[in-house]
Image (cartoon, rainbow, N blue to C red; front, side):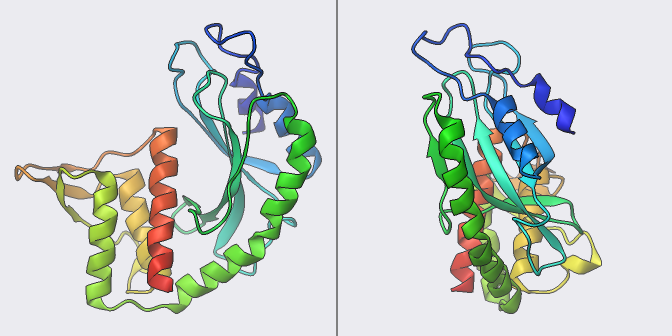
Length: 242
């Protein structure tokens, strides 16, 4: 997995202005590696100007100590988003990975996201952002405690599903939400949130359009949509935990 990061470009797309300075992902990755972080996964988006490796990419990293948690069913992660074609700033935020379903979640506006412009000073600024992000891990752990402590009523589950359905677009009339495993049974908020997230992102759930046509929901592979749906769904879940 670590070698995959080499395939990401470390220079601006040829169509960018000479004034545009890149934030080199490889150098940043090495900095994280020196701190003991491990690259868990990489998602890429094609560049809007063509070419390989210049588009937006999302890198998920974990650390056994800095991102430690008392929740043994999840792993906390740093989510880094970057590009070399002007499509995004460098950003870093928290997320978590649930082992039983191999799902990666991203926190929403409930916690801060740190963004850095492509000015070439990112390595100097990164230490402070990492410290601030790591400082939020206790808050995230407390949020997970809250999610796991709430039992939803049948009406609340239906309401959550209705809100989540809208994240896939207005043309979706209904989704046949799937319970894939024993651990996803029940109405616990954390479990409901996870199984809804899996259907929304991975697809394969049966969906009916407004025209009455039934099909399987497609998996989302776009970096932008993955981030958008994950962050918004987390905020919806936290609303039910309030």
